[in-house]
Each structure stands twice: as C-alpha cells, then as structure tokens.
Length: 421
Image (cartoon, rainbow, N blue to C red; front, side, top):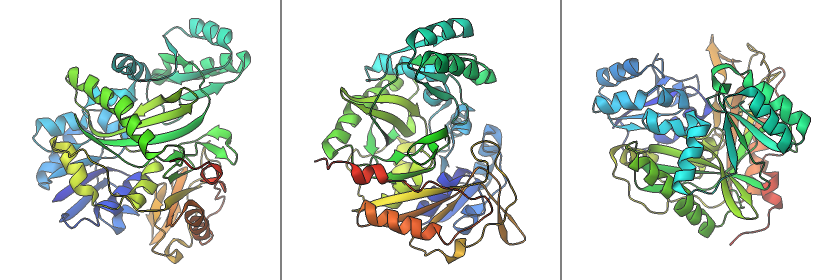
C-alpha cells in the first residue's frame, strides 16, 4: 500500500515511524512533514488543510490511503473531499470532526447519546457568561471553537471565573461562543478509539501532562509528556468506557448521517461517580500518540485502512507488556512565544531503542534547529513504568539546546497509583 500521512508534528513522526514498520507498506509520503519524518518517509510540500491540494496530490501519487494527523484538515473538510474522490481516508468528515471543532456541538452529541459528562451552559453573550461564572465561582470556561489547545481555563473562585470569561471572550472567532462547565475532580485519562463509523478498537489508556511545570503547576500547554498504560483504568473499566462512551457516540453520529471514521479521543475525568467525558477530539492525541505507538505490538496500517473502509474487526488490540513514557523537550519561553533558531545537539547519540520524535524542528545545513514550542518527544519502553521513565530521562540527558526545558515528573502519578485489576 502507498500511504499519505498529513501533518508535521511529533504525533505524525510517531505515526510515520510505526507505519514505516508495516510489511504491507510500499511507500509512505508525509505532507508537509518535518526533518524527523524525512528519516522514515518521503516528505512532500503540501498545505495539509487545503482539500483540493490534498486530493490532487493523492491522485497524482496514486495513494491507497490518506491518514490525517491534526484536527485543522478535518474541520476544513479534507476527509469529505477525499471520500468524494473515492480515496480512503482515516479521519472523520467535517460534520463528525465538529465534535472537536465545537465544544457546544460535542456537548449536544453527549447529551443525545447519554454519555456521562459535566453539567454545562452555552453562552454567546460575554456579560451573561460572566454573571453566571461569578455566581458559580468554581467553573471551567471553554472557547467553543479551535484554540490550539489554549481555549480552556479552569477557575477556582469568582474573580478567576470573571477573568477566564473575559480571556476566552477575547479569543476572536473561537471564543464568540463559550461553554461554561461544572468543575470535575479526579484523575484525568485519555482513551483513544480507532473507529470505522460503527465498530471500534481501544488503544491502552494514556495520561497526558498538560501544565508546563512539575506537580501540574504553571500555564496549560499542548502537553509536556505522556505515558501508557495509565494504571487508573482496569481492563474491565476500559471496556466499560468503550460501551458507555465510544459506542453511543458513534451510534449518535451515524444516526445523524456523519459516521465517524478515524481516531476518536475521549478525555476523561475519573470521578467518584465514574468516568465522565471532559472533551472529545477527532484525531490522535499529542503527546499520547508517541507512547501509544510504542505500546502497540501489531501492525497499525491494516487497522487504519480497515477504519477508513468501514471494515474494522472489533477485538482487543495486541499490546506490548510493560509501559512507555514520552518526555517533551520544549523551547525557551514555551508556552508563551518560544525562541527559535537554537541548534539541537545530541539527537543522534540517543539509543535506537529510545525514539526521538521531532515536532518544532527545522533543518538547515544538515543541523536541526528549534522552530516551535514543543521541539522533541523522547520516548522509551520498559518492562514497567519505572524502567520506562528511567530510560526516557536517561535519553533526554544526551540532548541539548539553549533554553531547553522539560518536566521531570512524567509518569510519577502512575508510580503512586494503587494497582487496578
């Protein structure tokens, strides 16, 4: 099979790394890709969120499958254009991708599907939203539209709630409508399902680390690291998430005529009343994908292809024993305005058993330079979480660039967690 993968981040590098191992693969194109994907695939210049451009390239290169990494191409209708052209696509049509593109739409789907989630109200008037937020005090304020991972603010008192509403209201188009949500307490876990519109298979539960500082301090980021499996969900509980969250959501979207074919990401809060959905994403998570591709012990290509063609066999996936950890190395000043152009040293001295996935990287004169906020994800798999953490952090010690910073507690919560059966 010839495959075109859309995107340019560490998530796409991890997917390219895994796809490149498939015996069924004849050629892998990545558009636009990055210097890391160029090591395992052929990068092609492409505007990933331009449907006509993607279809033209897919036709020209006679690709058998398009895999969409980020959310922007999905919301822009890339999958719709590919389906119309008769080209199989792993990634939902725009109507189904709205489950990530609009927080209000996601809540509407959850309510219709009977999916457990936080109580909420939707507002288009900032003054009304502010009054409601101040009255509630403890609340979560979300921009309705896509906001590059920065559209969610958690407020613990009335003053913070007021400021959160004003900040989201100032986010332009994304914040013109906002969702104000009950603040849930518990452990956060990511569950990603590969879906063919009707059936699904579940990847191991993972845990992301969203805040920039250790101990979950500082501002939110796109994710500073992840590990899998997260020990807070047993195999039986993971199966229940499939039955109570994924299956009814797929059924509701299918009834609406927008079947979901792709990666459905459920961000869960494990409350005392059971798992509740915080958010849905319409694609693989980043940095969760990096560790999930490490854990998956079977060929990913037939799975993605079966999803795209509506022919998925619903069964448990084959996964490696032990655990995987990914540590994000970030540029100076991230998550504000990251510094660019610093030379990255030491990537090639890291053991091949610890993949280093590139994100905010550009190549000039054979050297890698920083070109974004999250620069690299350093990954390792071990016989258990402790060993995986030890290997991942040992690998990060080989790498250096000016202003590099990272969290030193990725996976620490998992070590402290009581065992689930």
